[in-house]
Amino acid sequence: MNSVLQGRYAVTMDMWPLQSADFNRIHPFYDHLRQGRLTTTKCRDCGRQAFPPRVICPGCLSENLEWVDLPVTGRVLVATEEEVGVPVGFESPLIHALIDLGGQIILFARVKGCSTGELKEGDEVRLVVFPVDPLPVDGRKGETILQERVFFAFEKV
Amino acid sequence: MRNVCVIAGGQSQWGVRRATLRDMFQEAGKACFEDNPAVTNKDIDGLIVGSAYTERCSFQTHLAPLVAEHLGIKPKNLCLRVELLCATGSSGIMLAYAMIKAGEADVVMVIGGEKLYTPQRWEVNYSELASVDHDWDGAMGLGLPPPVFAAVAKQHMKLYGTTEEQLAMVSVKNRRNGLNNPKGQFREEIALETAMSARPIVRPMKLFDCCPVTDGAAAIILAAEDRAKHLTDKPLVYIRGTGQASMHNMSANFSNWTTWESLKVAAQQAYAKARVTPRDIDVAQTHDCFTISEIIEYEDLGFCRKGEGGYFIQEGKSDFGGQVPVNTDGGLLSCGHPFGATGIRQGIEIMRQLRGDAARQVEGARIGLTHNLSGFIAAHTVVIYGRDLE
Ligand SMILES: [Zn+2]
View 1 (cartoon, helix red, strand yellow):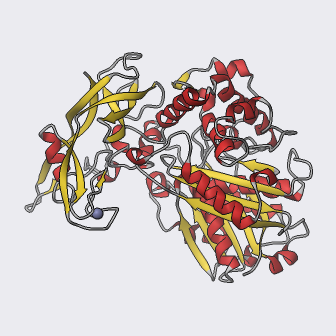
View 2 (cartoon, chains in turn orange, red):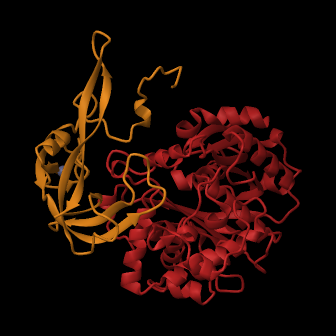
View 3 (cartoon, protein in one colour):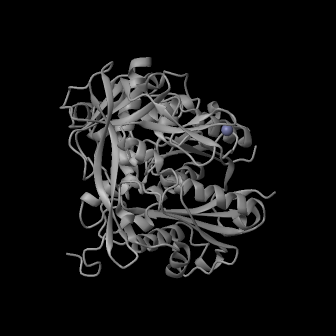
């Protein structure tokens, strides 16, 4: 439809992160997601665990980091249901919850697969990983390569 | 260090505009110069332009020289753009203040604006995914996030007994005050029952608990005191102190959802620099992006004790005639919220209140405050203005 772009994909309008090693130094996070693992980086020098994952430690600025696993199940502290103004690409109602992952970290995350009024405080939720739009990338011979991508949310147990 | 005064201010019409970003910058610049005919575009030696979504919605970078060219300004000391999403306008005022105070510029226009309505409406909500941490919170579908403020409200209600009716009272007050700004987006009063029975956006946030999406621009002129004395015959309004703080960005690092620690830090810095206390504030424009925000701001700005924000609105303490009238021109809930312009609109209203020529005047106001929050409640910006230096 767009005559100038001739159907080309403008990544600047892309809501998903760039995930491959070509574009992102924390690409292992997404590899781990494909294995059903929710991970982040921890500093081998000062012990600080940060989220989201980093390339330097926000405590001591060390680059000596390792990947560690976070719990993949958690408990709902607060749930919200967005009924109006949901961004394109998301279901309505769009449900979010403040989720306590085993006392290690609290995430405000999307909860998929619940109908209105279904998700309650105290409910248990678990990690769910799903494919998202692949990323078109220029190949060496001018061809377009589609890089697969994933993202995560939670679902009621 | 030099003293810095605010000598003029004006805004474009705000709302769903049939105009481009540059159209509205021209309207705001003209309105600003018309507020004080003693200052002209030839007097401006510095220009600071604020816009958060200029690349996103107008596909335009390098905005400051473009705006200078359209307003006939030829800045020689500074010409640049600032961005801090919802606090962009106040950030521009802070920067202009510091540059003038340090002697690096004499007369600076700060102009901010946003064109948010794109021809297809889906893009408006979609664009907002750039507002929070794009790779983490944005990918969870959080834009300029009503869900975040709904989660804040639920926790505040549980902890402190704040009620939906108290939330609605904020929108009723600010809609009434919106009659004081002829260029605001909404100029209709609403009844408490209307606010209480409105359709839910994210419960407990209903339609009137949320500020709208807005196109618009606003401009203000700051000058060194010695120049200001020659450039205005109105009472001088000084900037007394500023503070800006951030302690997290992504949701996972937001340690306290109901006490906004970085707001308390920014406010303490601004109060200390201005040598005033919360009790000294005669009039305030705070960031009422959602009704719950204004209630928490009463508390964390120190207008009342923690947890008593709901009673503060219920007892009329933030209304005209109360302890500290808040959002006297209608705030974001009435005027709308073009990110780059909001802090400037707040500054203009405080300037008018302290000059004594506001549309609806807080009698005898001599000290005023503006506050913005931005992003995932991730940064707070406070500016204190005064008729006096001590
Ligand atoms: Zn470290």
